[in-house]
Length: 336
Image (tube, rainbow, N blue to C red; front, side, top):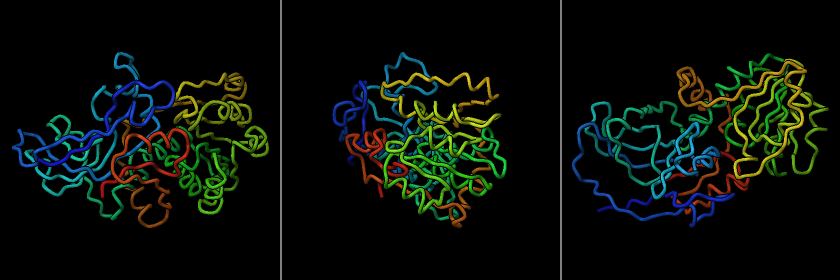
């Protein structure tokens, strides 16, 4: 038997999830030599993605939402990459690297239905497996789709990106720069602002904790607002967007743990004929993304976003750091 650690969801949190209490690392075992049923695939996990939306899955199962709740007492799930160790499924061979929804555990057995959702990664670009759950994975897909399908950027326009040092924000910035947009970006620490200015070369970057967002946007009125945070920042964007501006509703991390902010400028959607569209990337056609973005990252045309890597499973500390903003870059768990 082989150890098979997992990170389990054991209690619905009130406010921020508590490591070791709401989330807990559990030591299990697995027989790697056990025969597989028809259609099954046994894999070893290489990387897992930590994303803010997962906080919304930490709820009672009877409460419906756009993604299923986590199952109490079971491993959390999200996008990951793993290596096929054994297969009874003709779609896969031993050694294949596969991307898709994974349990938060060291080894997983996918039945035929779950295996149908796995994508074999050829990785001709030789990108790290952590990148395939970040800029070349769901966060990158989110940035690419939302900017083109909803933002509809025009060269010379101004885009404001909140939560800009995160994985989605960094790719939105890179794509916007390629398209000739002026980029205004906000983050929550001086270190992150310096990274936006010095490394990502945005036109304007500011710390929303020490500088007034409304005043910054009055001086740099956007045509597009990429919303990762909601709350007061969204209200400031509503007040300052140019007529016919577009808001890409990607996330509202400021409100994921029970806090709420009363928006005062919603009438601006009518007054300025704004477009405000939220979206979920799951189910969208990402064929063009896979044909283009990984190559651009590998070539350096798009700078590979900074990653915040946790080695192996913890008790949920790295996820809490993501929610509180203590992490810096794409939060990933690596097993290499």
